[in-house]
Length: 487
Ligand code: FAD
Image (cartoon, rainbow, N blue to C red; front, side):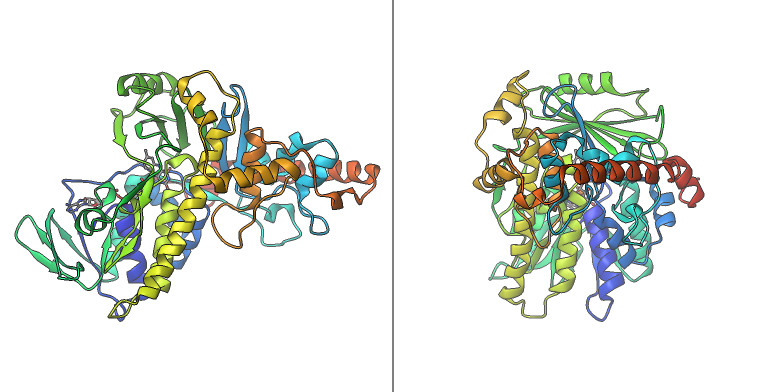
């Protein structure tokens, strides 16, 4: 149900990975309703998704006008004038099982941490080449994602999925037929067609037609922690060096994205409607962009939160139908991918086992909760007091789970670690330090090397990182030489 990025990613994955012996896939979408069509920045996990579907990188990049992404630059977040990059990669390397940042803390040089991240230094120099496989090389210490034209990814996947046997029906769903137990039996289209199925994947976007409307699954509203509920988006022509990263600049009532693609730059202002009206947001965005707009500004409304459960009865929500966390860390497409991976692993037999359903919901919930905390950190850990919006987020109560994490880091630089999940230790360190959460102490095991040895080792690593970056090609040159340039 639905043919946006979520619908076609799910259909393409089911067709390519599960195959017709497991499921016959029938996708219903309405061109008249259309898709959200923003969502240009991604996380490195998307590469595994494309690879699993047999999609070549250059082919994908040509089709979607994609560029490479080494991380996100955050400007003006902790205070106006600040800038830091949250990279896809490590800072330095652990020594004797002790995190690199502890050694820097001990040396009194914690503020220089970005100099030890290859993707940060490469991003600052607009360099890009894919990581090497040799784990001894500094050029293996990072990952990367893409920035792409979100209106082109779903059609690209659709072509593949239809070739692999996915049936597609154009039409507006006007009614949902349910059994006595509440399971969905069929969807009814405006032209009278009735489409039946065993399992319904709700990819209907914010409408949440099956899970929210038909099944009545409640929405957990997180807007008291994440008050941004609107965005205005406008593309413009690129006016400079092709940067291999997304920029998120804090604004008086939210923040503004800048996402460089091959053929244009995507811009948007994500804001809280309680603190700014739509006209003022649009004016502020248009004033901030670097060249003439290429289209009229588009307004989008949303609410932070998720459905209490993503899988209920025989309905599984994927994408915006299941929930939304604002695009600050480019997590939506990742959450779609997570749901698809779980769906493939737990693909139900008939009757559907509640154990599979619970397992799916546990994984999805946990990931939403962790991403929520990570996003709140960006707003809450700030000294900004220049607008009512920043006063609100700086002083609000945060979830206990986040408060505990922040205390742990402030005390001695410890990061609550997960075995799996999206944002691991380097991400938290980047954002803590970038937002001005500086540890008071460090792991005492970092006292082992002598002062002289430590200072010398740090200087060497810093130089090696810079030298390694200088061997990389320019981002734009690499896109051209790898055959990824769109015609
Ligand atoms: P939609 O795109 O809304 O698709 C819904 C589908 O359901 C459509 O095909 C529609 O026709 C169909 N449909 C709905 N109702 C009916 C009906 N009654 N009958 C028939 N068909 C129907 N994500 C990222 O990963 N990175 C980003 O940088 C990012 N930026 C974003 C910025 C903003 C401001 C917003 C709002 C979102 C952003 N996202 C981002 C999220 C991303 O856009 C979505 O996760 C992604 O597009 C998936 O949307 P979807 O497929 O769930 O829903």
